[in-house]
Length: 100
Image 1 (cartoon, rainbow, N blue to C red):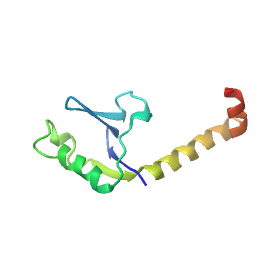
Image 2: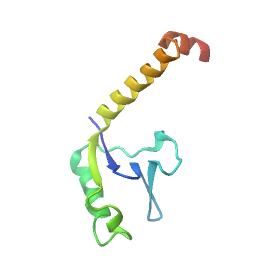
Image 3: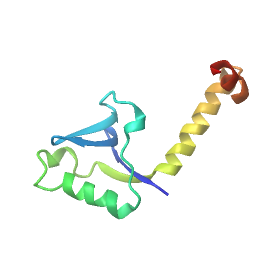
Image 4: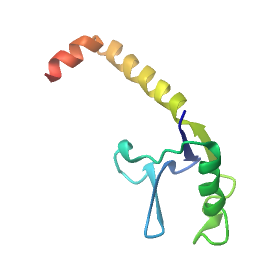
């Protein structure tokens, strides 16, 4: 099982570079760049840092971060994808064949 961090306003944490945090969809970066954690404890370490005084803007994060199971989110995304396919009158096989 994998975990990810979600901000209530910014979206899902993608990681940081040069002290700046990146969030999906706020940063317009592709979803493939989302940060994954093997344990809740690893995710909590990043939350603890973002909410600490060592972070440049801890008030933007305090009380707004949560840990969620990536696997559950993936299931939700797959269900949403299948819903859109059905609404478009397509089956999963038709979509695969159209892309080949």
